[in-house]
Image (cartoon, rainbow, N blue to C red; front, side, top):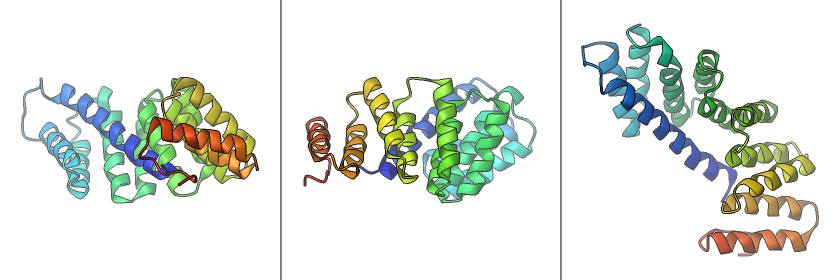
Length: 213
């Protein structure tokens, strides 16, 4: 699988995590008209993949000043996810940046901002964001995978290789890490090691496409 397929799956998982957090936040509360109801409507639209509607409702919720300030980072992060899904990566980056300013330890915002930076070919910024994720959680193999992909795009094959190797040490069941490391070995001219990694991809996921196909 390609980096962008990894991006899409992880992106969805991060959105679902935000939705779960918000549901826990909002359900015990009374539901007066205003910010909380707009937030709930925004979450429902996000879950339904109606991203324009989600942005509208979440913006209304944020602007209402009726939402718990201690949870504000979640609202900005979720709106960032909706904007990213719409393809407005700069606006998504702005929301993730606000979320991180309010909670510097919220790793999903850093991870998703890194994905947006990667999508804009801002590889140095993406590397910085994935590094921030790893400062928060040193065992995040997906962040290592994506940081490796950013180094690969910059042409630094040794740094890419090191990141994939660290990722595999943390999660040897992820075929994407072996696929991407195999591509680095291929670029380095080490056909034997590349083949070993591609065979491991097939072992972990027989349906995966590799250069061996």
